[in-house]
Every structure is written in C-alpha cells, then in structure tokens.
Image (cartoon, rainbow, N blue to C red; front, side, top):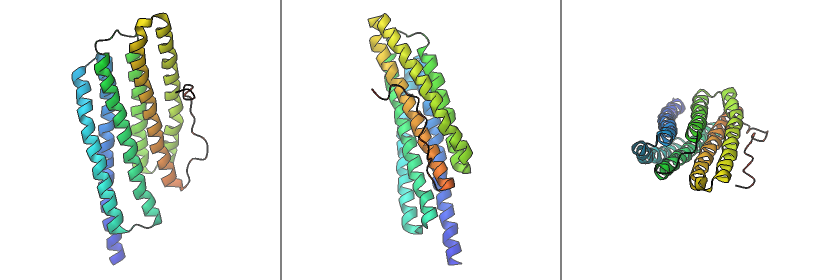
Length: 233
C-alpha cells in the first residue's frame, strides 16, 4: 500500500508539472506569433508586450525547475520514471530558449519601425514563424500523448523551415547588392530569420526528446538540416 501511495503521489506531482509545461508552451506559441505580427504591422506596442511577456515564460521555467527538483528529492523515482522527469527539464529549457528568440525578434521590430521596408520580407517571416509555431504545437501534443510518430514528423518538418530561411537569406543578399541603403534593414531582418530558424531547432529537440521517451533510443539518423548558411554563420 505504501508503494502504491508513493506511486500515486508521484503521478499527481508529475501531472502538475506537465500542466506547467503546457501553460509555458501556450505562452511561447503566442509569443512566436505576436512577435511575427508586430514585425509585419510595425506594432511597437505589441512588440513591447512580447518582451514583457517573456518574464512569465522565465518564471514558469524557474517553477518547473523547483518542482522537478522537489519531485526527485521526495519521490526518488525509478530509472524509467527519472527519465520522464528529466525530460521535463529539457522540454522547459527548450521552451525558454524559444521564448528568448521571440523576445529578440520583438527587440528588432522596435529598431525596424522607422527603417525602409524590404518588399515581402515581413510576410515571409510571418509564414516561417507560423510553421515553427505549428511544429511546436505538434511537438507538445506528441509529448503529452507520447506519440513518437507525430514527433518524428515534427523532426522532418524542420527541413522546410531551413529551406524557408535559405530563401530569405538569398533574397536579403540580393536586396543589399542592389541598393546599399537596404543593408541595415536586411541585416536586422536576417537576424530575425535566423532566430526563427533557431526556434525550429529547439522545437526539433523537444520532438527528439519525445522519441527518446517513447522508444528509449535517441534518433539514430542525423537530423535533416537544410540551412546552407550554417557553415559560414
């Protein structure tokens, strides 16, 4: 009865922590799209909301760290349960980094507000951000449902994000070559595109964590990377 009681308490504690993960994920999803919308509409107020909202994301990560440490100390989870508990820390860490990238985009939006527009760039960046947000939503669903197949699909979709980034990178180079007055704006926009591409990498890390949780093995094949600029970045 004692072991059953301990197991029940462990499950309750873990469920509470995973609820924090889902709340954190929801905030990060919103931050991604708000940052992209603020850029497209040059909405300084919305960009500021994204920057302020990052504090709530950071606070949730701190709470998850504290409750996870408490769970390990009090419940002494077995090997399989410990793997599950430690995955929470890795997922929350990746979410926090994605939130940081959204905040960085919001900062650049403030700088770009008074700069000349680069045709089609903001809309293209919003589409790229939207794809990353969808990947994140699916990765979190896969995590809660322990769905390795959905997680693998998310991993594969990161290649599309890389290809979108490559296309934007080439466009920015063209704009800068055609008119040196575009250089400053294009440098900021490239920074934003790279931040979104990095978001995709962190989402992929979450998905890889799901595969590990479900199968006990980490993905053996190299992650499909189509970022042609990474060799020189």
